[in-house]
Image (cartoon, rainbow, N blue to C red; front, side, top):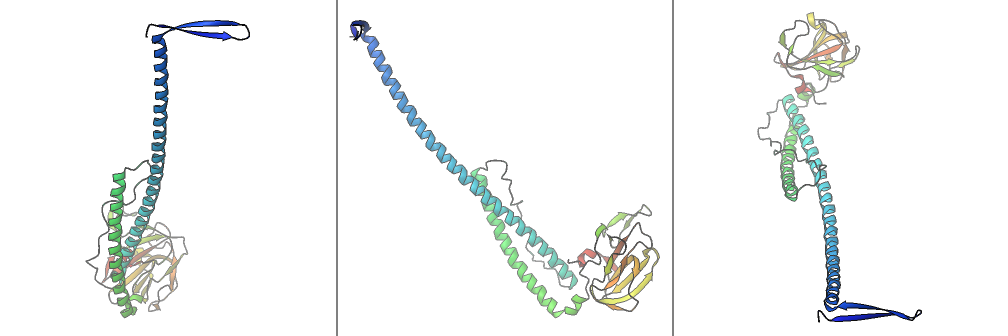
Length: 301
């Protein structure tokens, strides 16, 4: 059969002629097998293509889902960071209030949630699933700690409000506002003196402002001194209670008198550059029992 000869005759109607082809059996069988193989290959390729299309479609859906999850995680982490910042400001405010009203610092304050920032950078591409799960667990822990801190802070604020209601007079006589507008150029710290070049401790804060900027009383008190005071230039001293006082130096002009009682926000004078000064600014001191303390502890706004 393989070597038998087969003849194929093709007739041409119009010309009345014909063509004769001679094929071996093995050739016909080979041609048949090739046809079957090609057909089978096409079927397999089509199935593979269909399978690939389904996989690709599934990957696209999964990628879209992952992207949505990443967006949600990013939004949640940003909210957590915002809550952390807000609670931090509340804790600072709480601490200042306690100093001002002589209320003991709460030794049981919850520590700020630890473990690094909850905010991951999702803009650098695909975040592995295990990282997403880890981040989700971390953020849930952050939320739990923030929730505990918020409840504790609420209790502390209620304690402060109770103390404030019972000590209204103390609060009115406790410095709590900026004495003038401007920007701090020298803080309550060691520094190199701009006049001697030696290292010395700066007993207050310097608030740089244009000449003539109003200066206000930070709390109720009695003026114990107003006039020239050596290197302080034109200055004012304000006694708030038996232990707490404030000092304002380098004024351009003073608007109050000795013995005068002033209230919080009342005008004391104007920013200047009298005395030993490098330019218009207010030197502001807060003294507790005669000892200088950081004025920023007595500034709430």
